[in-house]
Every structure is written in structure tokens, then in C-alpha cells.
Length: 317
Image 1 (cartoon, rainbow, N blue to C red):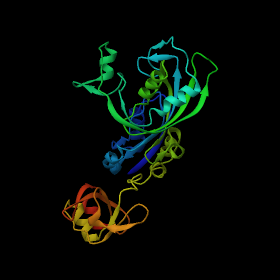
Image 2 (tube, rainbow, N blue to C red; image 1 turned 120 degrees about the horizontal axis):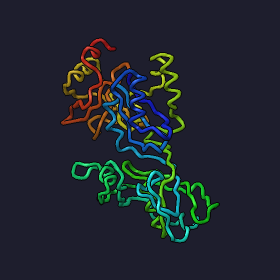
Image 3 (cartoon, helix red, strand yellow; image 1 turned 180 degrees about the horizontal axis):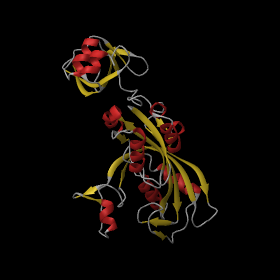
Image 4 (tube, helix red, strand yellow; image 1 turned 120 degrees about the vertical axis):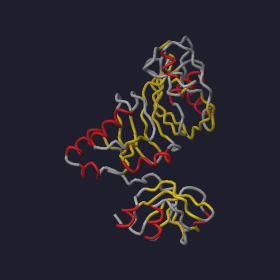
């Protein structure tokens, strides 16, 4: 059971709950995820099973897409609907004011993470300190907001308008903090009322599998669940590829360096010399199997992640 299972996480369970469920369904402990979602949030949660767990690190910097519901007129201790709300006396913002404020967040920004977050301070989780009533002051971090679009504006309650915003951002961005800061930017307060992750790197919500569908497939047998998996290297199309000989596959399976003699096919089917590549390369055998992730060192391929064993390399299975 090796591959990527893109789950459409519902609101309610934690990301760990979803991982635990898929571990049971797939009868494997080797399941990891590509970025935590808060329990109240829903949306794309890529899960990496079996050999794919070794490639999670190549997805950690993936851009994220969100649909955020921002509620104005109050602040929250957690910066979202799960915290204690404190109404503000400031005038309610207008749609035009919010649209203008959104523009100020585009590009690289410095963002202060929420006090209720999993960031560690002197070995302790910030949320544990905050729940204990301790003052938590987290250092700001640099993130990038690639796009912001106001999709909906609801001012049926004129004192507490609600905005629905599409966000595309760098990994590590806190949408709760963005909602909080947006409220401050319009001279009042705001908190995150709902959140849907619409994309995690190349994985889109439209292509995600519901937990119900995963349960049904597992109930019909392991093959049915396996049929829902994307390839081990799904989403890594930007990494160039190199096809090596059977002899080179066997050497790589033993962790040995290999000096490539061919060209590499990159995204868009452009062929370039292997020696010109700086960064990870996907190594395949003649049958198309992903053998390893490697980097070039002094003209030789250095295997970083070997994904087959020597027996499989020998027998071509």
C-alpha cells in the first residue's frame, strides 16, 4: 500500500484522527500527512502511505490555498471561533475598506503566530502555556501571501459583517493570524469563523476523496483502497527524472553512487544534461518504477531516498 491518498477532511476530527483511521483501513503504520488542519477546518489533507512517507519532506514547502470566513466585530483568544470572543466598539468596516486592507497583505509579510499554536517555547507548546494562563509572545515569522480575493460580503448584521476570502499563501502561514490582522487593519477586530483548505501544493479539493469513500473502498478489499492512491511521487512533477540501466538500479538499491550517462527529462518534457541539474532528481528504471530520489555530487548520483531494496532491484519487482 504505497502512494498518496488525498483526503477531503471534514470539520470535526483532528488531522491525527484521520491519519489513525487510514492506518486502520490500510492496515499499515506507515502513514503521514502533508500539513496539519485544525479540527474545525476542512479540506485537502494529503496522506502519504508506505514508501511515500519518505517523500513527505519534498512537499513541506508547498503553497497552500484556503477559503476563509472572516467575522468582524469581535476578537477571539484563539483568533478563531473556538476561542472566547470579545466584542469591539469600533465602527464596522465597509466592503471597500476590507478590499483596500487586503491589498496591504499581498507579498512577503511578517506575521505573528497565534498564541494558541503548536509552536514550542522553551520546549513547551504555546497552546499549553496559553491554556495555563501564561503570557505567550511568539516571534514574528516571514510568510508570503501570493493572492487574496474577496469572494463574498455579508453585512446583513451591520455591526458584524462577514467576508469570505480566497487565499493562496506560502507554507507556514496562519490564516487565523491573517483574519486577526485584517480586523486590526480596518480599525477593529476580527476572527476566523470557518476555513476550507482548497489546495495543498498540486493537490486540489475537487480531486480529494471523502472519508466515507475511503471506508467503502477498504470494506471492498485492499485492492479497492489501493486504487484510490496516487503514485508515490505524485505532486513532484517539477523534479527532473532520469532513467537508469538495470545495473545502475542495482547499485543505487545498495546505496552506491552512480555516474549518469544520459540526459534527464524535466517537467514539460525538456531534455537537459544531468550534470546541469542542481537539486533532487527522480530516478526510474526502464519499467518506469521510481527507484530513488538522488542528487548530483561531483558528477555522480548520490541516492538520498532509496525506494526499492536490492532484491526488488535484482528481480525487477
